[in-house]
Length: 299
Image (tube, rainbow, N blue to C red; front, side, top):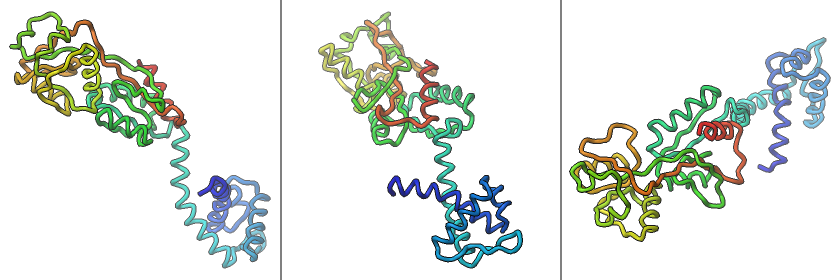
């Protein structure tokens, strides 16, 4: 549909409403009041429609009007058309109204425990009617969905740096070394990256943000890590470490970690930066913009 056709159909909507109202009450003045239009405007529209059809759609009977057969058929068609149009118009209204719109947020699985619920809770306290679509996945999938327009915002680490994206840092999590409590490094106060050169490492699969960060750290240090296991879940990584199958670079556990683990600071300190990203040249609907601004203020 061309833009001109779309505009024409929107302009037709009030006339359809007039015809629908006439089908229920064949009285022009009351119809005009019901649809919120001046009575002369309604009368002019009805006359114009009759001229376009080549046959009158109403006949006058005293102070009232009566729909002709052609008018009755047209009114029935108008009723059906409005039934299809009105839900779409409501959706458009909700998208344009920050108090009624919908926000589709993509984020990493680990953020679903507390970070995202807290952001949404704080926003809904001020905007209780905004609806949310929440998409959890690996970083590469979330970023792809943002690029393809399937989500409005992406909360990932590290934030995407391509020219298509705009982003701002929300927070940073410290990276730590996780080892079995019986490991030779368990008694250390801190661990250097070089101390892990000969260790069997348990990591996330390629495509996960934490894997990208740790790969970059080892590469910058000139270390070729010995990968023992690759996983899709951080908690699985912790469990494998607790079982004595290797060591890992992770962030602090949000809940009590499994027994048999030690969490050691990394020196020099390193962090995992989380950013909120959106498409740079894609206008954000008001509700999405409001949530973005809320998230950035919350930081």
